[in-house]
Length: 255
Image 1 (cartoon, rainbow, N blue to C red):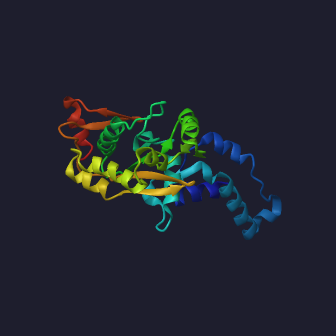
Image 2: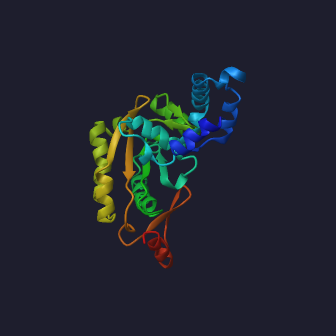
Image 3: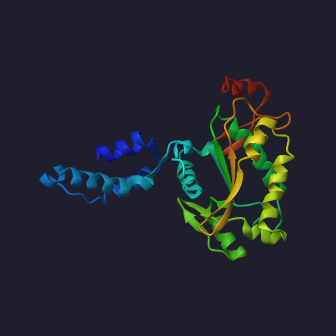
């Protein structure tokens, strides 16, 4: 068991994201014991068995540590696991339309995302963060979407993938045109040029569980970022405007 933990935590640079699940998983392990466990092949089989039972309770400490060639789906699942322990670096939105009976496109969601892009990159120097749109993080929202949009959300790690195609249909646009509408809003914003350029070059869609999800990678920056004359940061999972007198505190994070 020690070797299994060593290989996951030290060699693969992973961290525990769900301690309760880890404890339950340890109770399901079935390995060879006594003298035959000394045999190298049996010992390796035991280690692999333990790792297989508990590795879903871990995630890479940094998505930049994910081996090259791993599919985007792997990165996404790792983000869902990581978001449990690093809330400030991840943001999830179910979409841009309200879930009320009178469905309307909410520009305030775009404004919130743009503010979050600014705030999330000001957490620390050169640390990538992620915003996913098409993910409901509340079961109630997922149930409402299932009812009004006639879909079956895909659940993973307590999040509910609902996608954006349903909203593209509501808007009367193709999915590509709908996503382009979002891109244009970010592109025309007053985000600091160095940040905006990095975000626009790493904004993409992928399919997970049969749903199209918008991923906005907020690349780590070497300098503080602004939205017009305002500065934002993160307080837990919330984006907050930084008072003028506290801006030097943010600036010191980039020294």
